[in-house]
Image 1 (cartoon, rainbow, N blue to C red):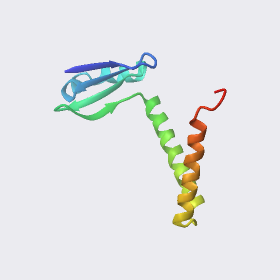
Image 2: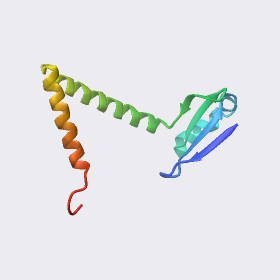
Image 3: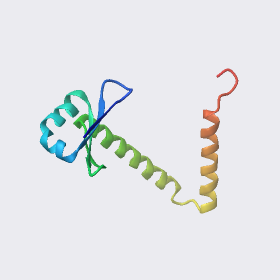
Image 4: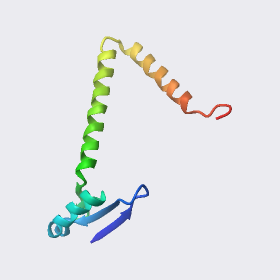
Length: 108
């Protein structure tokens, strides 16, 4: 069974295929991921088990993951010496500031 969903952004498509179909068409799947930017979800018994994506997409995810964990490390270093109450106060303050930025104000 093959299910095809067209992504709104760009021309890339997301396809869901069975493991048997993936095995039979692996070369084509690699071409679709690399040249067209498609993402192929591979299912076994109706359960998503793996995905084939372009190497560019994979590297982009790797970079985002590294950036995320670098930010986590930075926050941990900055807050290591804070006690619980001080940390909770800083979190509340940051959340309030972020929410205030998102609220539409006059003239927005």
